[in-house]
Image (cartoon, rainbow, N blue to C red; front, side, top):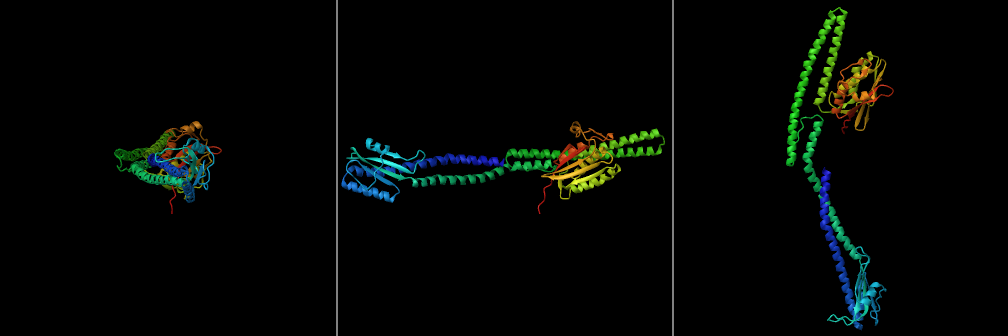
Length: 462
């Protein structure tokens, strides 16, 4: 927007300069042409008067005048006398249309030598009449005087006229661009402040506010957004309180119920009763897992924390160390590949990456056959870090991949339909909140690959 304002302002100034400067320059150019033409014609008419007089003194004066004119200027004076020779030391003009017109019709001519401004010479041809007196009576034509005036000096003056105005226009445009930049930045400052506020909002900072400055319209918009932010912050605080209360209120009775079922199972010898208790216990475990996933999803949607630089390598090592014992019981190995060292930093909210890895690794372990390998691969790609978790399970069809991120959708693993159906939904919510993306691909050979793209944290200087 700033560039558009500057361009518009400079364009407006350029149009104003063109409207006022260019016509003036053309007027000065035409005036220069007319003044030069009149001056040369006046000199030629003076010499033509001497030629028309025909006396010896006049011819001598004409010769001296023409010679001096040619010596002191880069111009050339040519004289043609049809009757008695006059000023014989001066060269005669070549026969052409202008000379014929002067001799036959008695009319002066001026030729600039070019249709565009002028050529190298201005050629003025003036006829000489006899009996030119005070009453301006003209006799027959007895000759002609021609002056070939060099336009080199005129060209220099022309460059001065246009060059000065071009330089002045360039300076004015440069000053206009600087002023335009200052004015544009001042006008757009409130909008940039609003954009900064929106950016902080998108990163989870609900305390961001924009000062009500600038024009009345932007002040009204800033106040409206600040009021909306206040209400949103209040609602999010209420949601955080609800999530915390729900976490406590739901987990406590489920834990007590599971302990009661375990006590019943320990004190009962009837196999049918034990079987029923075990089924009830499994349902309680599944319900606990569902409640935990719902609470995690609610926290993710609340987005109460802002993303910050985290060492990917450290997070991976910590979570893999937690999951390797469970994998060892199944004979499944977990391998870490790629460049997941301490120098690889990603932007993520605290706790988000841990939950993402837990959900993805849990799903991978569930579908992996005994003796399989789960491969975790991390690499940097420009301003992103790509994390891939590949299993050797049955994989997913394209139809299943399209529904895998839907809430409560459960895929067919090796152990049948299991889980809450919220794991991948939680993964997508957390990754998206941190500005990343997640996709499902076919793993090399066989299995499923969960590809997670995270924002790479900028490297600090020093």
